[in-house]
Length: 115
Image (cartoon, rainbow, N blue to C red):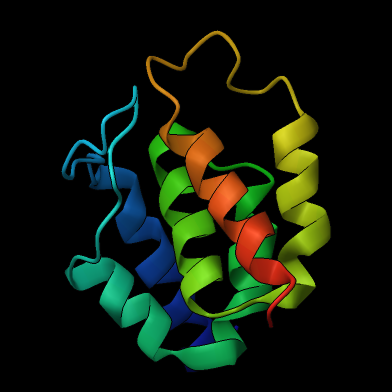
């Protein structure tokens, strides 16, 4: 594994320990905002996109929310299929207390047409 690949994996691993909190936007979800980890991930640019896509397939809820957020910030058109698969999956149906992941997916898919 290259040093770059290892660093990117460590950045994505850091999402595991983050709670998702942000301002309420009037619905049963929170507005996801940047933090030090997401800024570092996005600063890697497009080269981190394949790692984010791979990790999305197995990520727990909070990291999945942040991964979709970062993919949107990176305008990762290549992530469309992975995000759609997540939207269609039943992986988090029994664990969701709010609609934050659903909203991040909606925002990603909405913005995708303009990239």
